[in-house]
Length: 349
Picture (spheres, rainbow, N blue to C red):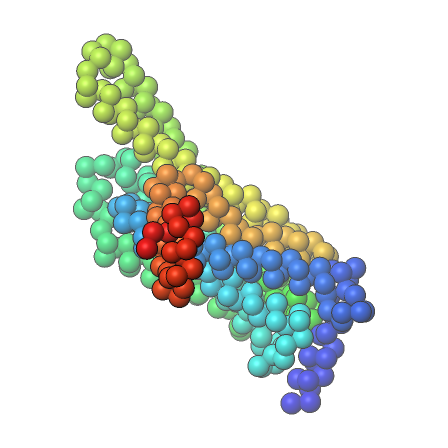
């Protein structure tokens, strides 16, 4: 018990960003601000996404909504998990030893981000099947198979990072805000190579292959439709063009989400490979690349809300319902005050 307390006390003055430590407040100010800010954004953003999907049934017509909701739940859990280092940096006592806490935190966040990466790969496969095999798509992609795929994503992500608990290596730098993880838990080049070969490389190759072919096929279809329309100017040609453009626009939305994911994760992956192979570490670089990658959990919400018109309508519907609920509560609490304000304020009693 004393050793745990001593470990906690010694971690109070430990800062990855040493220049952010202030003696007057006795905590790592810059780290706390960054982590708490991202935590609030991630939790609030993904809660909104989840509620919008429940309020907009049209969003569930696409099979990709299964994977997008899986990503939203995984990203929400990332935000909830980030409460642990936030509270630790603010000197709240840890329920268990610091070494176990940072190992579990690093493992959980690695698994959750792996789920997002695998979900993006499955989304690209789903869109590829939808465009290359439209006639048999509904028989190939069924709700039961989608649920099975999501279960396998979670299982596979867990198994990939499970060896980190058996002292094979370090899954990432997410737990480095804890002193034990930063100083005593080292990366292993073989485990890093294992993660890259089993997760990062296959997911990236799948995404590149599928979206390259998706846009190539959409471009080819659009060209053929334009040629037919120029020859015959038929109504069927116009309908086909609308369908082709719709598929391309939806694929572009998903491609933006995937692109931002890999752009934010690329510095982390590069640093992870370099640090594992050379053994030279930099606390500032590890913190910056790690939390830049974690910030993607909020960026998904922003991209989807800006790119998808159905999602925007669902968001407006949700905000409208919340405003109506607030107005009803105001009327119920003080009907005489609301009545006295009259119709100018938008309330009619």
